[in-house]
Length: 243
Image (cartoon, rainbow, N blue to C red):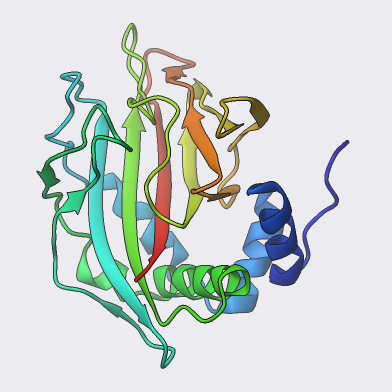
């Protein structure tokens, strides 16, 4: 049975609390973000994916992932502030492919990090996740810009580590742009690895949210539709972890 459309963050919190994951179509997600704040610089925000370095830490030797990264803190007084640049670290328990090392990714640019769109996205996440976990005094927030490129004979892997959890409390995956690709289907599994659902982010603002402690998630590789043209999948991943 298809879920009813989401029209408020309260309805979204109820679904996420019940199912441990949620898919939002672009019109639903854009409306919720617009209620949380302005998206005045969205075009510049989306274009920032065009200027990202290759991820140098790919254990499979791949050159298909581009990435930038920034860390923020949300405090009890309501402020969300950018933290000093720092490495991204996951234990091997959560990321057997790339865990166990400090990964120093290039930072998200200052104009993008301080821009209306990213600040609105973080404010939306904070409001939503605090409905699910009231009373958290400080959230550790990590933001990742990802571009996964696909080439003829070389699929791009959004989740090269396979079905996984991130070791945080909550995750947002927001589609920025999908260009000339096939596949890229997200699937959600419970802790016993039973499949709960699947969906494909196809339009800008399509979004997935997961309660990371309760479910695994993964995305199938992407392939070019027209091998003569550039092919890529741009997403913003935001994680919230209570401190």
